[in-house]
Image (tube, rainbow, N blue to C red):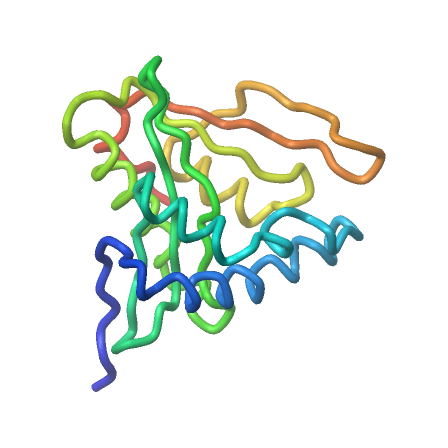
Length: 167
């Protein structure tokens, strides 16, 4: 029997593994939109370390390997902004992204400060859109970035955080 995946808070020692995983995971997004200059592919290690120090970052581990990660923070108005949900390509399509999304929602909503959850993805990122909708998110806006990319923002109320739509 194989090892099971565990989800926990990221540590500063995870920074390099998270950044390498982020680089791997965002290759498909860059290809989809024809833009390899996107922020997840150019983010420096120091910037990621600052996110680890100042926000909520979770990782999923298979043994010692970081195989997935997600980040989030609650802003002063109570909006929990979730970003950079990444899952190693070999671990995708097994429910790990949904588990990580639920875990970050629970962590960000634990003290009651989160009134809503919000995240965004590109308009062509069908897998991402399906995952988010399956977990109760609805589109609230779009923003055209350029001729290749329109960002789709999705949100749900914090009271919906405990409920997951069935597939």
